[in-house]
Image (cartoon, rainbow, N blue to C red; front, side):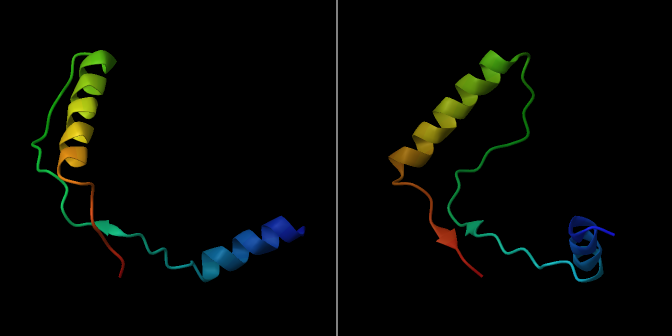
Length: 62
């Protein structure tokens, strides 16, 4: 058994607990559907502008 397989077996037996920061002040948005990527990208640009206008995002680290 090679070292990679041993690492994988170890991680499967003892999975690491992943901790990610949580955004606190994201602007709200409802579920949406887009007809194409151009529409989606235009929406994302506007959403990022709203985030920038409010001064960015605050993060909660647990």
